[in-house]
Length: 329
Ligand SMILES: Cc1cc2nc3c(=O)[nH]c(=O)nc-3n(C[C@H](O)[C@H](O)[C@H](O)COP(=O)(O)O)c2cc1C
Image (cartoon, rainbow, N blue to C red; front, side, top):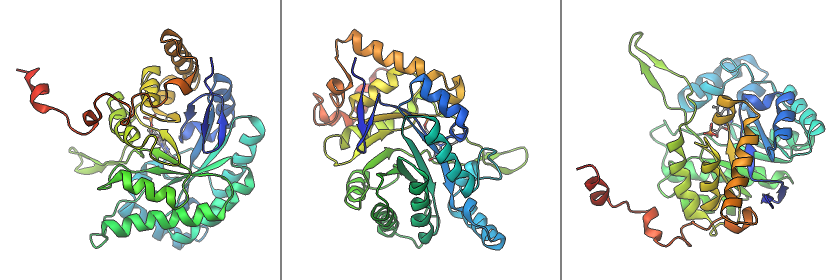
């Protein structure tokens, strides 16, 4: 069974990638993931805040982060035990590369424009096989316009892609008025991979203490639906690799993502729930599905149900609410 796939020019033995999470900050886990069959790992993001040596500047950044980048609260060093400083991060890249044969993708989450390139280069020098840019940006400043936000993304992607030789992927937000055309413009700016979608931290309120609740929940299976839609729309129309992230619970979810055109499918919550060896279960489930349908490999079924190939392409755009609701009456 040929499970091989290509992601941003990297040949992967299968399409299952362990996405950025605390699990992948431990080289022992990375080794176990590789043994269990993961085709690549994405290291947890290095946040620009972790890089700042100057304490005053650091404090200002933390404040700014809390205002404008609330998701960082959930992954931020003070709240996340796994987070490491920049030197330790570069060391993690080196040790992971030495420990496993599979590609090790570094992830960078910056805020100020100048930091992206410097650290991207350091990551490349440390041996990262590719970079994932987690451009997480909540435009809470109400004077910021949509075009200005999009331009900021493009500038970062253009600068980093031009400054390193390894491929660069962007972990995207779904919250753009036209995610498809925006994605195309990022590819034009140099992105070789698009990761759909970043799961935005969304606050809740703790009523007993009248405080914001800044916790991070693991994903649920129905979260595959939004990435599924946009992968289906982009498949075959974008000159970049497509990665699916969010909501993978079982091998069936991986199959669905591949059917709409994903080159790789990433998973974190399932590994946190079931342990890193769960990769084996996902992989054997994918293989069993392909065998049962007489597919000789992943290449034969990828994109079969993307928007350009599905029998009713409009089904991706318009749900017939009247018919659906009739089922409830
Ligand atoms: C505890 C935890 C930590 C995470 N840390 C990062 C991170 O550092 N950088 C990043 O880009 N995504 C991070 N993510 C997001 C995951 O990589 C993934 O995109 C998201 O959880 C959706 O995939 P899933 O449904 O398989 O969990 C984190 C997710 C969790 C649950």
